[in-house]
Length: 310
Image (cartoon, rainbow, N blue to C red; front, side, top):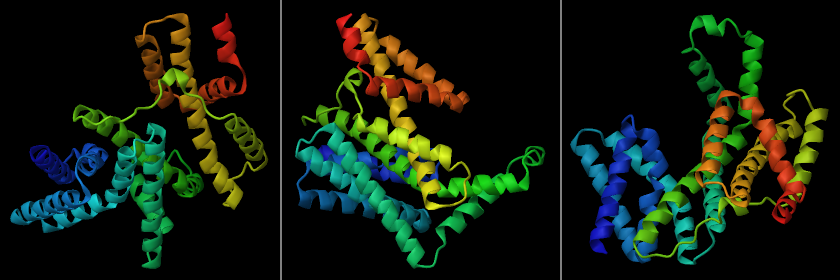
């Protein structure tokens, strides 16, 4: 076990070092996995020892090459992922369901982000103003010909809307980290002798019927409050509607797997359908409405039971 612990400690150090390279997004996405592995496979005292030694080794390496600041940033980043990783590790040790693990990791990650934003605010950092400034700076990198096509007032409206959607971005980041970490950490832990439950097969996924009512209420309110006037209810709708639409889109993808199972199609068919659908969503974001409706009908009506009977 000590060799495995050393190996995963080394992997953690390497991933944190990669934060200063073009592979930064890959490193950030995978950085929680070694921590989860070490927490599940070691007792608490040994976990603390290996984790602290990993961060000390990281700082020592970066200092040797005159990049102590990089080491500090990497250590802070790793510490920022520690609580969600421990929450997921605790749930793994309790043999909780995959859904509980992902939910726990998401909530822990989101709570930590909110605390971080609160601390920034207490220290006098105006987060929304900083986001606006960042977006304006990003727009300056766009060719002037393209910038001239968009009126200045519209740019201001777009920036205001994006700032109001900050809660959605935070939730999205939290879900992303939890799903990626669970997906890969489960595979690694199972190969190490652990028995980590996975999600149910995609063909069995089904949202609660209450989501239908949430969507319908949000849709009606969205029709009433059309203008992005900065009010609380408009801000809520800007964040709630995309979440519900994404949930029903995933439900539509799950329906593809159910349909393939009922019809006896190859397992590759629903995978191809999901990949093609995801590609279309990137090219034509507006068609998410179609997938939302399909997912909505799948939840609201007994489509599956009728298909099984036929």
